[in-house]
View 1 (cartoon, rainbow, N blue to C red):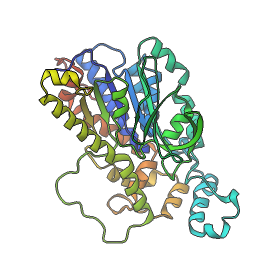
View 2: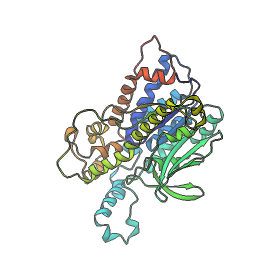
View 3: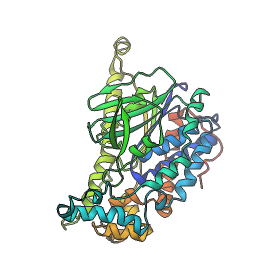
View 4: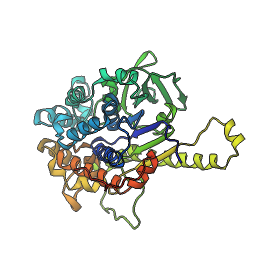
Length: 404
């Protein structure tokens, strides 16, 4: 049995609009806690997030003194999302970024000498900074740590200059920064620019300048070059970790029929993003499970001599393909965005959709995010027993209430 005093960590992975799924999982976990009669308080003293998961992680951390209210706040935002809250979706905004970016790709050799015509990304995410200032009260972070509600918060980004995968963390305890191959930890106060950098989907959103070891580097999405998504939570002292993914960990049995047509740019881009956001988590979980299995074979004396320790992990990830869900909601995107994406191959609807994988990261629209939240609730409620075992919550006589 897990020690009830074990430090529990939460790891939220990346995935743009797919991160709505995480909110559904957290909503269900909060409901299971209440129905189990477990004490109130922050469930996760250690919180680590990457990409859009970093935004959810920071929002939870800053309100760690009221976990249920923090989750309710996230649910409210994600259930009512509009793309214009994250990036410019009006015609002028799209022309200034996306249309110009696509033009540079096609005839950039003609106009390359005009530097002002060089856009930095496909979309302008200036609205996201405004939303983050409303959603994440950074000034509360230190206070909730001092009051004992939170031990540490970590968010990750990737440097385009050095190629390093950088974990920025804030903690009150004496946690020494760690360095691994191509991975670096930097102790600092987490700010809005850290969240913007961590969630800057490559090509889609612009890089952000951050201070790393005394010099400025432009950083993008933390899911790039992320070999060990769970590692920051372990370094920060977590002994059991809930990991919430944003994509299927395992494909269902049976053959998935592909297209015989040559892939368009949107399909290639979607495949590349899926590789960036989804694959590392499955590899890291398998690695951790192998380490746990090996440690279980060691005699007590040998176990005491190793710096490794068993880490209990519960992974909750979508039971359905989020690409398929996105395909049903392509028309929810603003017309200028649909027109721009159509230029690179996103088209159709439902079973006839093409490029839905790429769109699944950009669909910050309520019909899509609400369906992902509902899926997160359903998947978590289907594993009530595992959740209770993970947290050492006793069985309750009252039936579990499904969050609405």
